[in-house]
Each structure stands twice: as structure tokens, then as C-alpha cells.
Image (cartoon, rainbow, N blue to C red; front, side):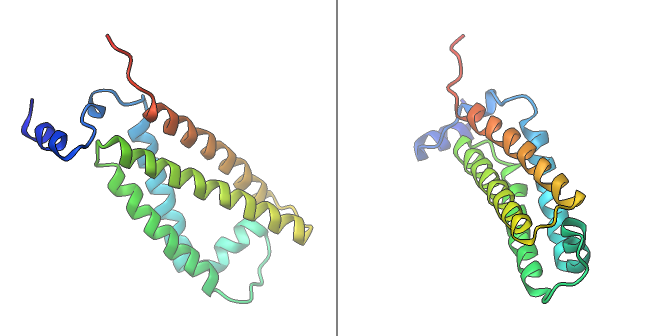
Length: 152
């Protein structure tokens, strides 16, 4: 047993996860971190263009809410980047749960906004479809990471 594993065991952390990860988990974590970072930077630097891409409206009253959204996303992206370097099952599961909740809330907020405005844009429909897809992938990995490994 390695020193790190012994220390983790003494601290009560799960140590056997590094042996058995779901196929593609690290790739998904990397893609998620890039998506969160990219959208955050776009929201912080080009709030008008981000809003226009989703809702196909050029006029927004204030850039502040979109920039705050970008700041929140940037914070989440830091969590995603750090989760990429851990082998702790609990940390990975919490990160995936956070990601699934984010995508779910974004799906609901975008849907409600579209219903209230009465406009359905191509950008918004693509966003909604991608969010459903991302939710499915994230929930899949969340449950795969939580499964007990089969005894061999």
C-alpha cells in the first residue's frame, strides 16, 4: 500500500476509486471545464453577443446580470478544473451533481424565459437540446461513480 493510500485511509477518505473509473469520465470532466470556462469568459467580455446568440435580441437593459452570470460560471469552472485532478470519489460525485443541477436550472430558466417572451429562437432551442444532452451525460457519470465496484 502506498503512503498516500495509507494517509487517505487514516483520514477516512475513499481510496479504491482510482483503480476503477467509468470510461470517459476524465474526458467529460475536461470538456465540462472547457465549456464552463469558455461561456464564463464570453459572458464577462461579450455579454451582448452571448445574450443575442441565445435569444436573438440585440437590446438588453443591463450587462451586469450577464457579467454576474459569467462570474458565477467562472467560479464553477474552477471547481471543474480542480475536480479533474482528484481521485476522491466523493469530490467527483459532488462536482457532477453541481454540474447536473446547473444544467437543470439553466434549462428551466431558459424555457421559462422563452415561454414568457413568446419567441423561440434557433440558438435557444440548440441551448435547450444541449442542456438535456449534458444533463443525461452528467447524471450517467454521477451514478456510475457512485456504483460499488464488482468483486473479481
